[in-house]
Image (tube, rainbow, N blue to C red; front, side):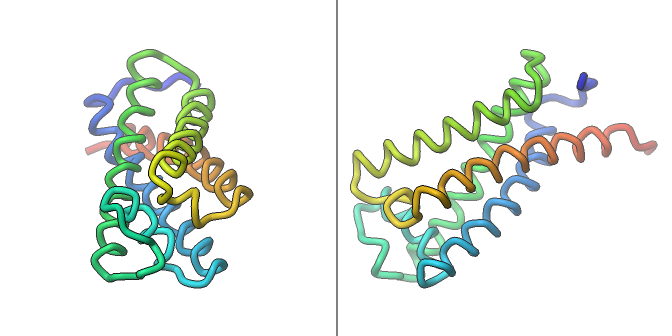
Length: 152
């Protein structure tokens, strides 16, 4: 599908990022609930940066993990919007690239630091997370352009 340029990848990325952040945050809460606590994935995200264990479950780790997660989702969304709007990639291809890159980076962070999302979430859930991220980027792009076509 061809997308008409709006104000730019950053403004489109904000809309797409909101959808992606909501979808992936919900997915992480469900995955965390399955492994024992909805806070575990978020604690694991920030534990990789602060060299602490995710099992400590400190409120500061969880809050920081949520902030990191939402921030990274918005960054992925801006990159996605840039690929689609400026480089004219297919939205499905760009979303697949972002999902695969996120999956690979989560593995690299876990491998390098011994902490991170990939250390607490099973492989099947990480694959599902990458698919949810990819799908939410495509859906978010549809919302972004639906919004841009509405009369003021």
